[in-house]
Amino acid sequence: MGQDPLRGGARSTTLSILRIADTVREVFAAASGLDPSWFSFNSRGACPTCRGRGHITTELAFLDDVSLPCDACGGLRFNPKALGVRVDGASIADVLASTPAEARELFSAHPDVVSALDWVQRTGLSYIPVGRSLDTFSGGEKQRLLLARHLSDPRRDPADRIILDEPTSGLHPTDVDTINILFDDLLDEGATLVVVEHNLRVVSRADHVIDIGPGAGSDGGRLIFAGTPAEILRDDDSLTGKALAVASSPHS
Ligand SMILES: [Zn+2]
Image (cartoon, rainbow, N blue to C red):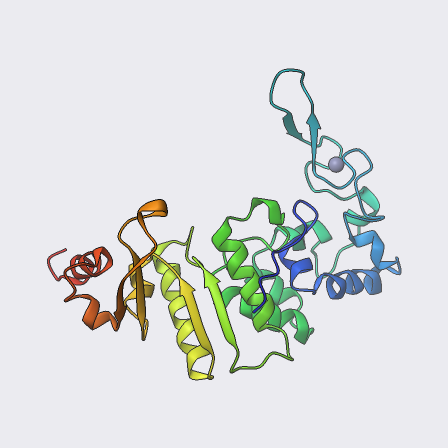
């Protein structure tokens, strides 16, 4: 997977990053006879008051800017003409507010949407509405969205090498298991995973652990240990090994 950072912020969403926003707009266009651009808050669908941002930012001299929800659209980002169109009872704003599972249901006749949203759920992003702005994503959430986009590409090689930097940051412990299951599936398909990670639930399931230390930042940089999780438990120099031993103790 490339290092390509996710571009765009307030103007990008899960749908646009996964390249399925056009399908969603075309469904609304077909239902209404309007051009698809009416169902983009970056285009003709934009609320004229906030220009599709959903909020109004006021710059104050000597103080931080103040941002308030837009009164005209109620923060929905679209104009009344766009919001008036419904597909199975849902407006375009309803779609953007829905979870990946809800959006998948609504667009179940569209294989590209179904496939992309399945990957979103498997990467542990099932709690994020599909229209949430990318600039509100944590680093770990962006990593996982980038992974979902890569995995949803039909041209990808299942045996490719995937490098991830702290993909579990910001994840609830139960969602870490979702990621671990996905990692197992990718390995079964032949992928090689290189994961920079502190989460012990991920570290303990690796085939090979490389522990760099002894501390963080300028206190680190030395190779402390390399080997299997079982071996690191017995390594006296590795803080990771000690933490892993405590975490896997039945008395902890
Ligand atoms: Zn507005």
